[in-house]
Image 1 (tube, helix red, strand yellow):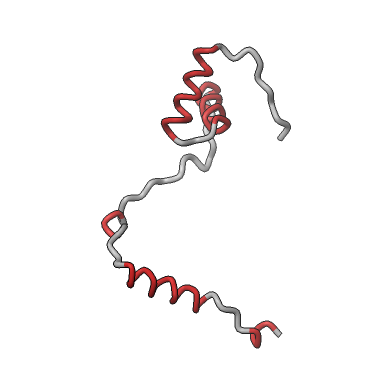
Image 2: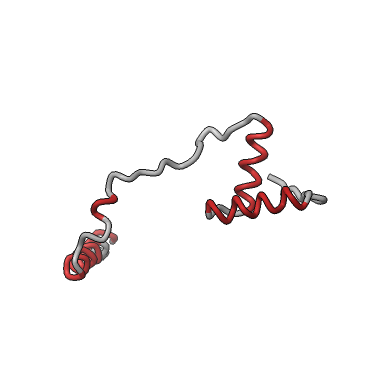
Length: 86
């Protein structure tokens, strides 16, 4: 899609967009698109990504040794068997 340039954005609107971008961690572009969609009464079919918290209890639960063993296991799984690619 062709880029759209907006000129003459009122300062209070620009401040609100920047504040929302800072608060949500989203880009200015994404914030503006979301506001335009809401104002136009349209939404993307995909919607926002779901936020899940079902694994939060596991975050940071591994020791350094367990994490290193897991990383080694992943590294071993990612090695390419040259015979399979002949």
